[in-house]
Length: 189
Image (cartoon, rainbow, N blue to C red; front, side, top):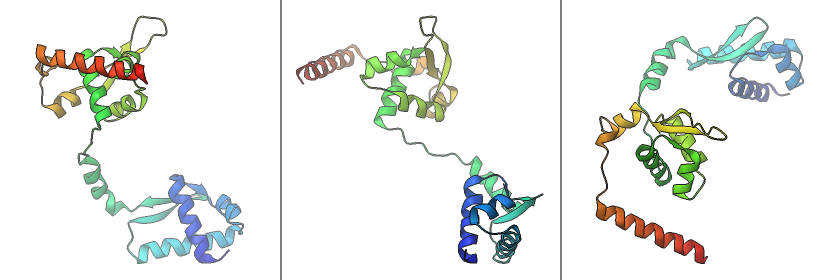
């Protein structure tokens, strides 16, 4: 195999694997001998150093790993500490609203209210740490119960669930009429 292509394939393998890879396995995959593979790896290590790249090759016994250079650590820590912006879709907001107002609530109850599967929405809300598993309901199948978190309160600027806005009787009547119309339309289809 051409050395340029071998370097590219080694880099791709090491980047994708994340962990160390034994040099003899790299040689086997590249269909090269171990000596040639070691030579290619050393050329890569030197190039990374000369070009002042943010990565380096680290030898661990008879294995090698693609690693971040130590001088990059402070920048990695800074980026890891920055808050990430999360955009909540309508689907996520609807699901979150149901959890907030009905908690503790099961996935089945949320799906009954929304009328659609909510696996993705719940998983995303769990990932964003806006909802959490509160335990299991004492019922057949022992379904999980979901509720909001402190992160939810912080993000929405409320101290407690009692501070959530309350719908007026007029709004509740409008919501009820809209739901009845939607149900009627879905029956006609």
